[in-house]
Amino acid sequence: MKVRTRFAPSPTGYLHIGGARTALFSWLYARKHGGDFVLRIEDTDLARSNAESVNAILEGMNWLGLEYDEGPFYQTQRFDRYKEVIQQLLDTGHAYYCYCTKEELDVMRDQQMAIKAKPRYDGRCRLRTEPREGVSPVIRFRNPTEGITVVDDMVRGRVTFQNTELDDLIIARSDGTPTYNLTVVVDDWDMQITHVIRGDDHLNNTPRQINILKALGVEPPRYAHLPMILGPDGTKLSKRHGAVSVMQYRDDGYLPQALLNYLVRLGWSHGDQEIFSLDELIELFDIADVNHSASAINPEKLLWLNQHYIKTQTPDYVARQLSWHMGQRDVDPSTPPPLRDVVEVLRDRAKTLVEMADQSVYFFKDFDVYDEKAAQKNLTPDALPVLQALHAALGALGEWTPEQVHESVTGVSERLQVKLGKVAQPLRVAVTGGSVSPSIDQTLTLIGRERTLSRIQQAAEWIASKKV
Ligand code: GLU
Image (cartoon, rainbow, N blue to C red; front, top):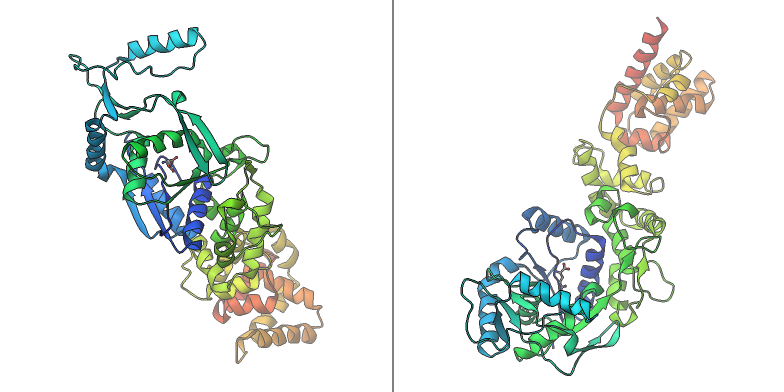
């Protein structure tokens, strides 16, 4: 049997990190077993679903690199099929029309509450043979009234439900549209899903889904319900704990690789290992090792992982991710210097790609304001002859390499008998606009000769203009 897993988000917002973790576990399980991973968009709630959210999900999956083998399938394109299955359930007596009005259901609930019984539909339309004039009925599933339904969960173990606890759920609304439990069942069946891996907020739906599958004569898939992700304070994860949308993590400068590594550890562990390559994850991941209890997010750990991956991933990988951030800063990353070279000089100095991008704008873009403090301290009248000498020396260089630049700068320091710092620092402010950058040789090499010379010139003019 070929393993087939799926990720089945409802497009009602962004891709949440909880959803991304579910997707990652399903993806890993499929990859580990040489199976297929299916993406299904559960967009039947027309009031809450929208195209923008679908795009946000696709963008998030793509950014994380969780490629799917089939899909995306859209439930809104499968209404005919759901109708067919609902009809099949009606024809076989596993479903029935229910004409109860809202008022009747309210009374039923109040009576049950009054005797402290669990509110549930009492099945009164089960035996009805005649339609009720003027009422568009819903369709309910005829749930077994005795016995138990066992969910043999791959994370939770055996979870038993009394069938009497599961009332006759609505599978089609009065306008004929199918409900969540019905569409999921039909899709998991049609898409031949073998392992349903999802959040444990769905555990209570599972016995209902199993009963519907059984009524259809279908062997249910295996289920694995993942524990919740909590905020650092142990409460349900929400926006007040920081970013919850996957794309927000991109915007905040995280590498997808770091986020994946971080997400996998929310609920899964392998000894005390923290860092996993994707290949390692595919090899080591097992649903059986998923924790039973909820896990809390830990933003410091994510930052630590991000820094680790910025330092250790190939410069090309980091550059591809950095490229987006440069675009956000109106930099065309295809113009020189090569972004991978920028990554190489900055990778030890940045914890996020936002920091890295902010630190590298001057490699690409000219500026006409200086950091005030840096300019006050370094672009002084004393620096004017230094900058002029640098302009001449650097302008005369045969080659523009770190070694040549280095020699030229130290040469100026020796000739003018000015300490190297008094040469390099005004130069740095002149060419970067601020007082912090990688080594002056690397900085100048990346900025390039022409830009370096014109920026030195600009700084000299700036100093001269202050003199008068
Ligand atoms: N569409 C459901 C959700 O987003 C998931 C359904 C499932 O995984 O069975 O919560």
